[in-house]
Length: 86
Image (cartoon, rainbow, N blue to C red):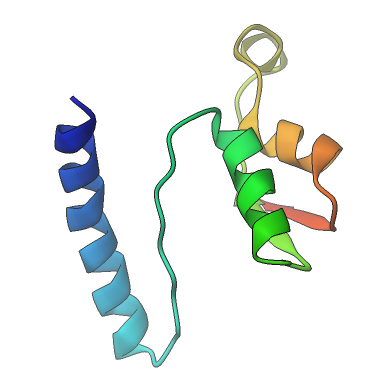
């Protein structure tokens, strides 16, 4: 199952990389298994990142309380500044 997911995401990453290269942008992609927020924070610490930029889905307050929010988790626990974009 993880191999299928990895293959699907790698195909998606290829499209992103093509678009980025067409605009002369340097983009690095990576995949990790685990809680997304914790993995983002962990990778930022390993890579000594000084700013994390995460997206926000715009879920309702009730949905966020029940499901949690990756961007909210990163915002609360990251070692560096976090920019949340919508």
